[in-house]
Length: 268
Image (tube, rainbow, N blue to C red; front, top):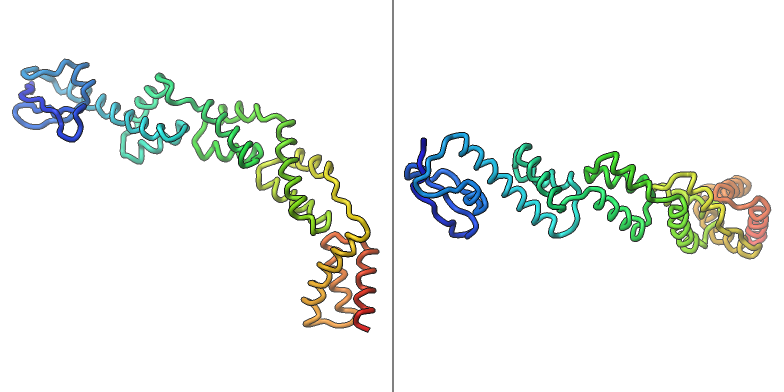
């Protein structure tokens, strides 16, 4: 069996040691491995022990790399596994490193998922479907995902979606109620809210316009349509095209007629 003929401390890492077998460099190990296996000069090592030590050392290095990765922020198990695989650690090494991380409470997918949920609700105003997608991309187990999403109550979803809808309604106040509702509907869908949340949120908003507001909106949007289509159309064809455009934007028929009458009088 090979014999340890030399043990030297590495220059760039004082916690690692080079092991020489029969006067030739064999492998490097952490100080913990050195102590655990009682490595000393003159000790004989069989091939099984050597392979076991090398494996344990790989696990130690993978564990330390994961700790550095986790030092910046919380990570999911999936993220840690990807980081270690990208660093070319084998599956068996990654499995052992992850087990050690869990054992020492450096990894906790449920706590990670809850933290992500709270952040996405508080800062990004996301709904369950979007957060579920985020967790899936992070490699979080489906069962953990469902458990954590169960903490996002309907009441909280309505509150979050309602706050976002209110901001959109205020920002889009220069549009018709139908246009505002569509903007809110599209935005909340993109944020990951379901129709069962979106519908009552939109219904709760007061988007109605006064007569003078309707006419002001009609003049603003109608003139844009008029200018656009008057390049190719005239007379009744132009009026029909503008009427269709305003109707699609959610203007009531009487408001459209008032606008067109006003426009016709201007052109007489």
